[in-house]
Length: 207
Length: 207
DNA sequence: CCGCACATGGTGGTCAGACCAGTTTATGTT
DNA sequence: AACATAAACTGGTCTGACCACCATGTGCGG
Image (cartoon, rainbow over all chains, first blue to last red; front, side):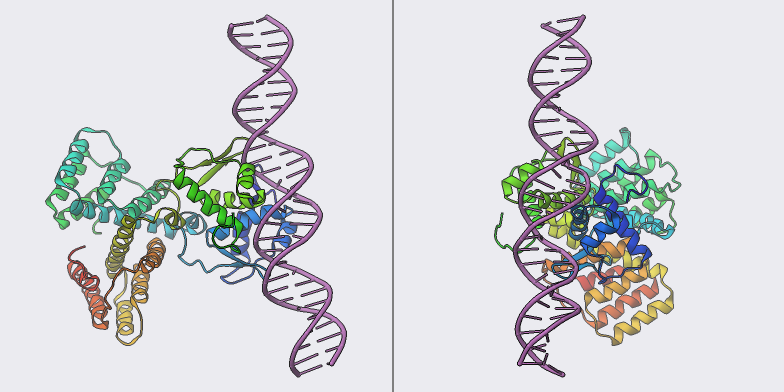
């Protein structure tokens, strides 16, 4: 144990170790993990700490425990959360493209959803705000996604936005006029126009 | 403790109790939870069991612990995972609509993504499979989303699919011909046609 | 009366050991 | 060989002990 920085909680270290073990030793779904007692000996930590790590991973659906038998890797393809799972998987360059693509598509979905769901008065309110207020891209789309009125999309977008921002994609500043124009297209309820304007803002040839 | 069914793991019961407490006693982000010791007395369980529950919730990002101070509810609006979070929040009727809406939009996104990304040979392969094979709706769209080649969408869709299926929305059986037709529209790369056909399958007036 | 230093109690963090309750495996009997 | 039993594991839970950290109160000196 005691790898890298100490002072961090032991059970978190165990989670890390477990992840490493799974990667290096090629554990697969259904495989049996070392017993809690063996694990605690191997890592020189108390069994209770091992249990805390195991319980946490169990609640996440990553492992499964059967009394008298042992602890097993669970088949968690795709399943379960998106967040911590990302920490496990979201490492390669390829995934970065996925984040970008997904964020943009969700934003587009919400533009169209918002155009159909929102009352004109709400759209006008946002248009006024877009004309006068100070805001960045995230703040603007946050309001758009509020219009779409879909909690799931809001959650996904929030996660994606944070990842996206941390990935440092090059991004041109969007002018206030373009944001306002985007809202105008929403008022028109013209799907193609919304799409064109969104593509312009995002510098995309198509979506 | 020992509510309803016993034999289930104590730490899971504590998670339940915690959720109930948060709901009934109106805990909010930032509020302090009872200490581990008090909790174990109150529920007549060992402190280690309380800790297992707390550690699991901590890893999920639902609570936060500060040594010497206590355990606090975390501001997890939107943030963090989607999966287990849903279990906590996804209870009202409203959320069901979100699941449906989101699932459909992601499927539509992936149809269009797949149409643009996939080679004709792959589309033809799927078409053949669609003509001859046995499959249900999930299996069909699983292959579609594979075409879209976006891990994030795949993960989201997998989660959404499971929730959606558990919600028992009424759903008509889709004929094999309609699935094949959908693939044909993808081959044409005509967005409007894809959309129309998808709406037909899902019985939607618009998307 | 104020302000600072220190003591005290509360809180999470960790460990060790003890049981219990299941499952698996080895053992020995028939 | 087949079966029954015993031993050896494995997870599940509780208790008690210590440590490190933080907040609060207490008392001393100013």
